[in-house]
Length: 86
Image (cartoon, rainbow, N blue to C red; front, side, top):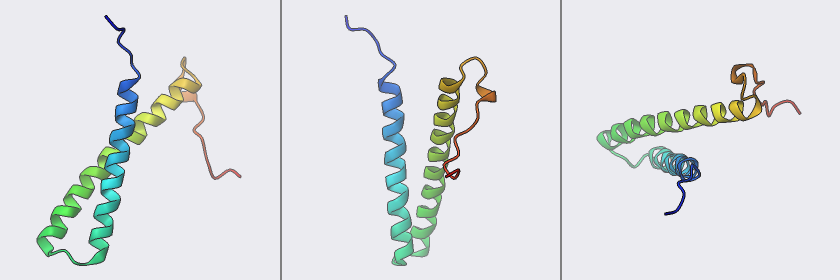
């Protein structure tokens, strides 16, 4: 019997994040096009909010994983990465 691995779960959440982000970008493009009815716009907006929240949660989980990797003993003391420091 093959060993169970934790690898599929992170890959799955990465794939879910990317799918949600792609769908969110498509929704924004459609809404910016201005061709949707008011009802379609409201449904798209509602779906977009849900997708945004899913993406935000995934990013927060990724940040926590990075903090745990940087300092497993005390993840709260790990210094967050700041890409603007160059």
